[in-house]
Amino acid sequence: MAQLAVNVDHVATLRQARGVTYPEPVAAAIAAETAGADGIVVHLRGDRRHINERDVRLLRKIVQTKLILEMAASNEMLGIALDIKPDIVTLVPETKEEISTEGGLDLINHKNHIQETVSTLKNAGIDVCIFIDPDLDQIKIAHKIDADMIEIHTGAFCDATTIAQKQKEFSKIVDAAKIGTKLNLEVNAGHGICYNSIKAFKGLSEIKEFSIGHSIVARSILTGMEQAVRDMKKLVSAL
Ligand code: PXP
Image 1 (cartoon, protein in one colour):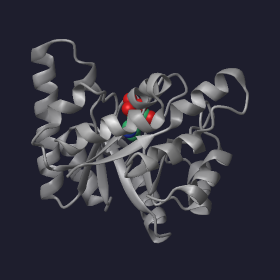
Image 2 (spheres, protein in one colour):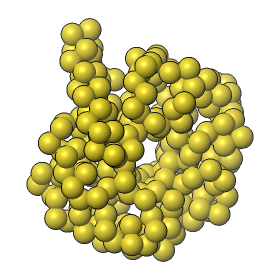
Image 3 (cartoon, helix red, strand yellow):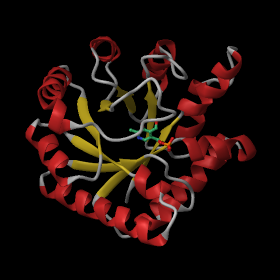
Image 4 (cartoon, protein in one colour):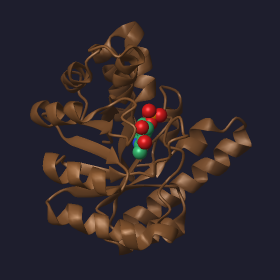
């Protein structure tokens, strides 16, 4: 059965919109776990636009399932990860201009640097996942540089507006999930997944975990966090 990792970044987005102390992402994480989340995800960005270091430190103390830290492969973030020791680090690309992560890591052009980062994290006992486009050449490099897992970027599929485009993007995800599994990488997926698009993944058992944030936090405003997570968990469990 596929698992659900809940990203609570956008609870912090709402807090930062007013520069106040609420809503509390740690409280959201506790509610998400109570409702059955299999992991809690946060992205500590260089510009600290939502999650900050204090959030990650508190989450490290209270998360009962597993704490997944998304971060760029920068020296600053590496230092923080080695100090806080999340269970898993997901390496992502990051630019200041983007609204959210726009694509997977380009391992073809940044192989050596990412390989060094993977090795440093793994030596510290942290499992490493690479956020990656559904591109077979990129996935083969993720395997070569000894990543433990990949998270396939589902954004292009979720954002596609025509059936033909959706089918084309989904078939790339299917191929990527199969090759990743064949290479003994744990295969996860995420970005842009909502309560409708999650249903498309039915039967694609190669995907072990879905990382979902925005749609869950958006629903939680109307239903409460526990209900929003329960609703998504039910859909993920039915895949
Ligand atoms: N996975 C990664 C690597 C991401 O960067 C994000 C966005 O922070 C997500 C998953 C979650 O995406 P969404 O908020 O669209 O569900």
